[in-house]
Length: 422
Image (cartoon, rainbow, N blue to C red; front, side):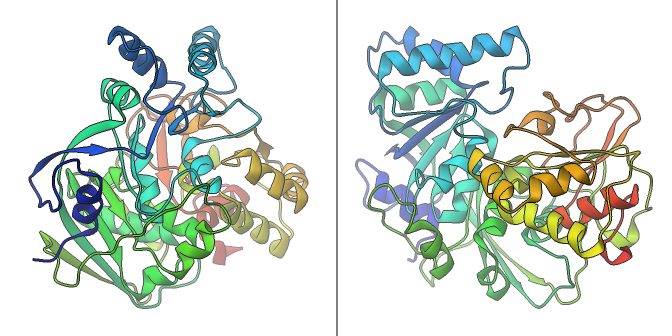
């Protein structure tokens, strides 16, 4: 019987099984263990409580302060200090300081630290982002991360797999963000609960790596355990110049068993927007009231890459417009590397002259942390991944999730808008 991508990678990392099937409980070896400034301090405390002196492998543990970094208050400073002390004591190679990294799920792929065929566990729900590279990547709690830090192992229940096939030509200004929003809108936020999601089809093959990372990033918004975009020429072109070690891609068998198969015809599809207060409250933009916005946030681990900023820059340059003076526009590159690329392209000046506030790389406003927290009754268009009540600040604020083109057009028009209106 054929195997899915999840089954292939889990079997390859299993200590005692050559073949696994959905529902099996398996102990596996990890290639990468990751935690951030919120989850790592708890994991470190649990690790120390085990009485273990050294981490299993100081090269495969990644500590990336990104949520409240730069430190927004004394508590976050203490959390970051915990990472610093632990990294120094354990001689960790991959502990990144502010100014040298950025958001974890942007940094690890761009530096070749996560590779195709890897099994990755991370102390963050959006660890599933790395499935765009063909890695099995999943978020875990801090105590599970502590165990992986100590042993280089974890246990998994092998997930069932759902297959999603995309074909057809959508309208202009439709990106990977729109495909995943439409998918979540159709299956709901628990439609893939503890399942693997495989994204395939000709429309997926045509996506850039940036768009693929965006799609995989929001697997968790459908409840998924992990998600995959199969390894192909696009993946290889992205990975080869970055890879820090050898890697082995895996491929699903043609006769693999899927719990369900979902077919999407994208012909004529408009940009999609997730309305308050859920990522599955999704509608085509033409069906949404174009109401006034108070803030636009362009960034996050979902859409903070160079290609995302390029969409914003192109709209500003093409139209010669500025952002509406009544809208706060927060533009946050996903990493220092992205910031430097944008700087060299002249976009930092472009965004600033247009009235945008460009920040150092951070998760910041995405989780209502800092650098863009919303007040009650405010409306925000965001390129991030969640819009539950209170996610970006006050529980009565309303957040609309959209792609960077919709976000930029809304920032220019002062209301939820389609780029064609410019």
